[in-house]
Image 1 (spheres, one colour):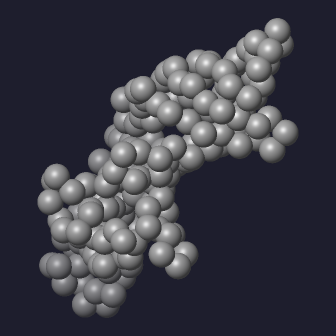
Image 2 (cartoon, rainbow over the protein chains, first blue to last red):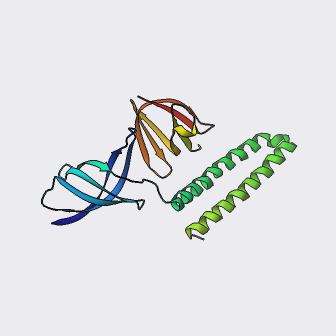
Image 3 (cartoon, chains in turn yellow, green):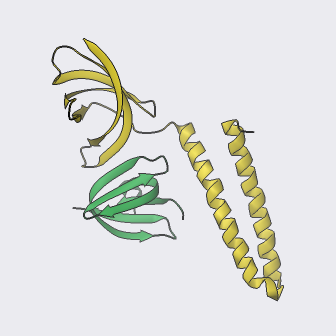
Length: 140
Length: 62
């Protein structure tokens, strides 16, 4: 019996025809018949499931039949990714708002002042989000 | 650019294929959606509409 694990990407076809692809790690044993075996594998996101498959390890092709599985990252990972995205995304919107203000700069109008004020508030809010992200990720 | 929600056939909560989509790649009839977590969904069909201000896209499957 040999035991090994490997990381690779393969596709999963769902009943509705949707195809997913993601990398994951297999840890499995072979018991005499390399063409057919059952194993458990753990996805990067931490979700584990059992399935049976036929495989050809030389060409490394897999046919999978899943009883259950989840491709979801943990809620915490999703939250951190979204927060990180929002901070960066807001920064680009702040830049756009500043550029709008620039167009009104010569007028020195009330609108210009308001946009500048709004931009400053936007920056403050985004800085708070960035601080929240830093505290959640332990970088601050 | 904002993240988008991709729907099948029409914009309806029941028709959501993927949320927080960061890229939509079309190659022939193959559409590959990738979300913020780099998860991918591939389907056969056509991109019907993408509203970049509303953050929505609609695909029809063949």
